[in-house]
Image 1 (cartoon, helix red, strand yellow):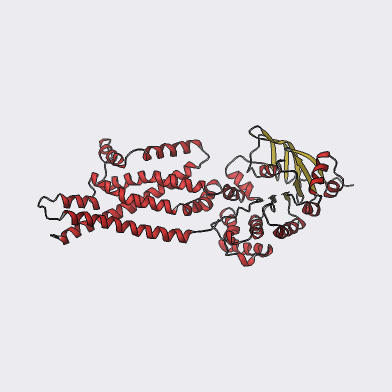
Image 2 (tube, helix red, strand yellow):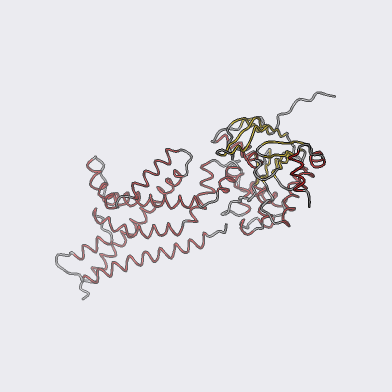
Amino acid sequence: MFDNFDLMVAALWDGLFTTIWVTLASFAIALVIGAILAVMHVSPAPPARWAANAYTQTFRNVPLLAVLFILFFGFPKIGISAENWVWALVGLGTYTGAFVGETLRSGINSIPLGQAEAARSIGLTFGQSLSSVILPQAFRSVIAPIGTLLTALVKNSALVLAIGVPELSAQAQRLINDNRDRFDLWAVIIGVLISYLIVNLIISYFVRLAEKRAVFVR
Amino acid sequence: MEETQPKTPMVAISGVNKYFGDLHALRDIDLTVDESEVVVLIGPSGSGKSTLCRTINRLETTDSGSITVNGRPLPEEGRALAELRADVGMVFQHFNLFAHLTVLENVTLGPIKVRRQSKAKAEERARALLDRVGLSDKASSYPAQLSGGQQQRVAIARGLAMDPKLMMFDEPTSALDPEMINEVLDVMQDLAREGMTMVVVTHEMGFARRAANRVVFMADGQIVETATPADFFDNPQTERAQDFLSKVMTH
């Protein structure tokens, strides 16, 4: 039953490693984009709010796969070329960023107005109020939903197999389609499931830990 | 008598009107506050006294009229407004301490970020101010761990840390349990005695009588009467003020 087990484990291990770094790198991009979007959402300048809204509506309402196809197939046609993994990071990052932005916005809205008024009344500028008072509190209040987005991102990262990035699911597909039929189907499937499960359980653990540490009473 | 040079008032409000939708919240307000003067705004709920207080550092915008602080017209939004606000301390009804920061960090945030003081210098000053409001042992506590009266005293220290030219108090004791009101009023009275320019919105008539140089009585968005505390409380001129005082002074 477990023919070529070591080969399979090595392939899945490679895939898992790719999944993890693709996820972490695109999550970093998503956090930056999300923070910028959230600031634009609460900006006093209407064009900033419109732009943030247009971005969010676009990325929330198209499939991630479509985003990846546009980047991977479309952009080279207009003369912008990059490696597969670059498009994977850009696609996952821009897509997840829209959701991070919405989550942070709800976090900002949950901060009582008095916090912003007090920040402004001691002479902080709009940007300083956000960075020193509002965003630190907003981030802490949305750690759990941001953790959910990270978990979803781990799963969404499977889609970059469609643009040829050899992450965990791509490796599984390769093993299942092996033309010499060297690998057991169920061993591969269960191996992949367990890999994703372990990654996300570890994430859940750290998210809960972070939530506990960040707790402050209002 | 010698002619004295007229000094620039700390606050000069003239012809200010403010609407909330159809509600005419402030009607043709004229008011000046001189340096070292303590002006107490009193009046029934909804009379516009809090709104007026909040227009002075532009937490509320106005629809017409002019406001100058220390001779400078209130700037529109932006850096100039932030600079003006740094010179005007504000104490809120609900304290509004920064919930994620310790007491010490609450007091040092402005001096470090706005005044560009070193952390060490800001902390030294903050500890002195906390000592002054009787809370030196609470420096590393978080706001939620303090009583309302303690939080409000921290809020006063936070305002004072900016070395403001003017302190404003918007109903500073209205959210406090009765036994905590005096600890806050005592700090305010000390400030008044030391010559701080103060605008105080309050329902504490005892404080108004003891600490105010002038009492401004508002009703329906208008200033109805302005007088010294003794004149106002013992001999109110208008029917509105007489009516108001008869209701609040019966106990």
